[in-house]
Structure formats: structure tokens, C-alpha cells
Image 1 (spheres, rainbow, N blue to C red):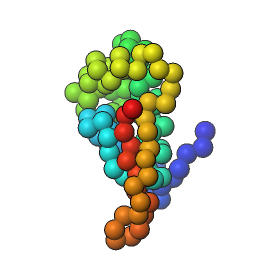
Image 2 (image 1 turned 60 degrees about the horizontal axis):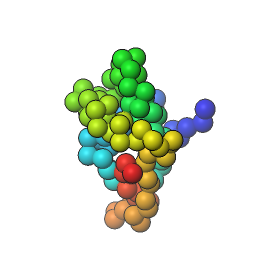
Image 3 (image 1 turned 180 degrees about the vertical axis):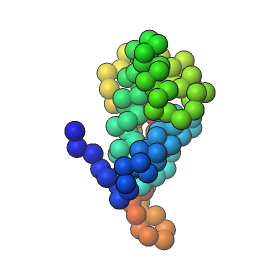
Length: 112
């Protein structure tokens, strides 16, 4: 499966994406660069699919990826049931324009 390397080594990239995913589920929206946002949206869709399954194995898989237990509880208790009738497409990536300073393209990633 192809993925973006984001100019980071593997460990740093994995930690960054785990942190961004946890923040997305905690606050239900995050502002980040376009490349990071697209990767986080992919991961978030996979996590919501786990939450919709709702069994113990799915919860443990989510706990292995997300960094905080309270966020996993929120994911399985409130976010997962919210999308019970929806098949995919749980996130929206909206372009915000260039970032002041380095003109990196910024996006808002939010749960629909």
C-alpha cells in the first residue's frame, strides 16, 4: 500500500500520525498541512471502521494505535455509533490556504 513519507523517518512519522489521529478524535477537527491531513484522514477512517465493529478485538487494535485510553473510549462510545449507517467517508478535508511563514498548504480535517 502506498503512503506519504512526509519527510520523516519511520518512527517519527508513525508517532506524528498517531498523535494527529488522537487529537482528531479528541477535538473532532484539526488544522494541519495538506499532506499530513490526507494521511490522517485515511487512518481516521480505518479507526472509525474499527469503532463501528465495536468488539473487544477492535477496541484493542484501536488502543494499540491511538495514544490515549479516554479518546478510544470516546471513539467507541460516541463516534462509532454516530456513523453506524454510513459506509465510509467519515472525514472531510477542507483547504484553508497557505500558512504564513512558509506558505505550506493548510487544511482542516474534521469528522463529518
